[in-house]
Image (tube, rainbow, N blue to C red; front, side, top):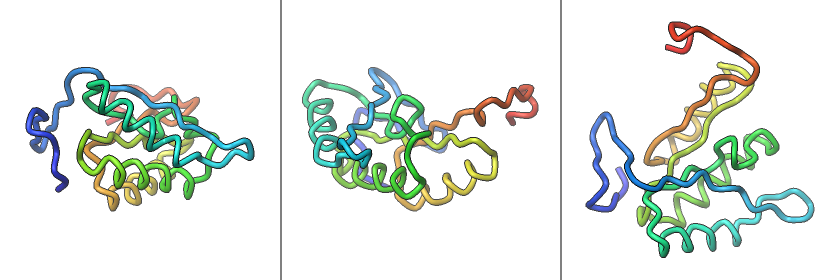
Length: 130
């Protein structure tokens, strides 16, 4: 487990509180993730008092990057943040199987939490979501 700030509650059912920002993913002109700019954004949010960041949520262009780029952006954010701020990993995908595989890979990076969305264009019932 990472060193999470003392004012952040950790348990099996971790609850995030406060200002949680779904961070946009800065991109280079050629479409690659701009890791330097991503680190600057993390620093800015830490200095500004943001309580947690969502990296590669649907706001973060997750549908536009490959799974390798998705994982690389999360790895960069988690390592750079170094537990100074909780990092919540976006992990939605078009299919349930793709989401499961992505969650397995992200889990190895030890994020503070996961933000999973329903597969795009699929409208399951509440029971189907569970």
